[in-house]
Length: 378
Image (cartoon, rainbow, N blue to C red):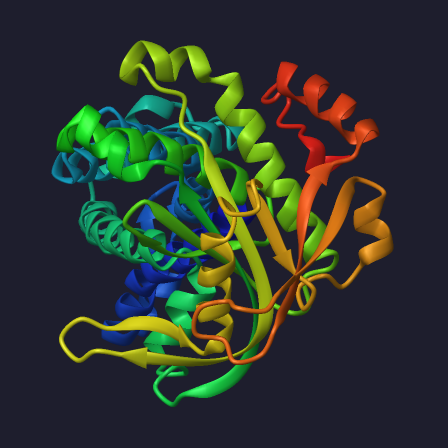
């Protein structure tokens, strides 16, 4: 999972950043290596135990960072999330060290484990370490925030290194997912309630995207643009299955939507693939963007869903595994001769679930998150 991979990378960064504390001690006084922190604890043992505590924190942080994300979901501010996450990190770090110091002294058969543990955390090495770890936690919170906005820790690192400053040609797949009847919904619900509806719908889509190698490129009003790279195996089939799963997920939660908004949101989708220009724009505020006819065509295909009475259109350029797709979906070929802004005809397919897959889809709705098994995981 992308979330787990990103978490592991951020944890490694946090461990390295905290260990800079020991590097600083060595630069100040190299003889510290031979020193005893207390009588029963050498510098090497101190380093090993505190790094063990860091490993524990990296594992536990999966849970309390989710708590921080839930606070945002529940409508609390990012400041409260910051205070919660950093405070819990510090408490868990101190607590983990106390436990590991106690175990260490117990294994060494120290006479007074309690006194030795107190002495270990009340000395000129541990107190500054806690302060340094607190600064690292604050740094990691902001890096995590940037990573959440970039969608990918590798993309964050890549952009930070300036890899996107010069425009370059790349191949990408694009999936546009758009809310049906958005204008009418906005008028009926009002601005605040409509914004909450979009947030709930997009959060559900995010939960599915996290299970795949797709990435959310951007949100444009009531529309989401999802991308994938050319080396993603069976991306065309998985893109169609992602949209099918999303529709199933929305239907599964129809009672919640009706209770909260008195509507059942539905979406349409267009999928296209081709060569685009990848670049970074802006000065004060920078964005990674893609330019090219592929995006324009995908947008035009999306606008044709209503005309052809379908909720999903995929271009022939995006279909790489037609035989495999036909095992799950019914394809109906279209030739659009007068697509707005296009000089030449565009070939695409409308998509419908095959009868056999419809049966699987209905059962998938029943146990959508127990575990997270959907059509796309068969």
